Image (cartoon, rainbow, N blue to C red):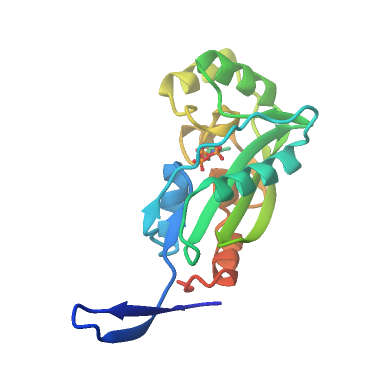
Length: 210
Ligand SMILES: Cc1cn([C@H]2C[C@H](O)[C@@H](COP(=O)(O)OP(=O)(O)OP(=O)(O)O)O2)c(=O)[nH]c1=O
């Protein structure tokens, strides 16, 4: 697929043809995803946050849920036929339980108490769409959170860093001090697995940066 042939007609009626790279639309409101992309030299031409219903279906398992969310986000973003749209979803899973973005500090506290002293999974699914074609990958990372005492929990909640983050924490911020071990992809936990994302962008014809 790669580059598209662009034909421009000027005011005299003359036609000019040239090859253009597709535009990249980041279908995400997450500043983390924008920052992660810039780490590999990918600067989106536009950012269009998707507006979808993120309620899990009844008895839906975390991984299928996460994959479905990324797919629906990519489809929800308006784009031209040759634009490349990139969307993702990060889901924190404690067993079969899906921990989304906490509504308030009380819910963040409840999530963190549930995660305290245990291993959980962070799943990030990425969807890249061009026209009707969608390329997807998902990455599962195991994360262990240390056992939190009341003072540590209160101190973390007071930072406000839990806001807008699945599971009520951000490993890249102060919560990094609460996470002694991960197995998997750090960038996936933060919101976008960069190695897998680079593969998907190349598959969709986006020019490789690295
Ligand atoms: C677990 C974890 C999540 N997160 C963030 C990444 C995501 O932004 C967010 C999970 O919510 P998402 O629904 O995946 O993303 P979003 O609502 O922020 O943005 P959009 O749907 O528009 O793409 O949690 C971290 O920043 N650090 C972490 O350690």
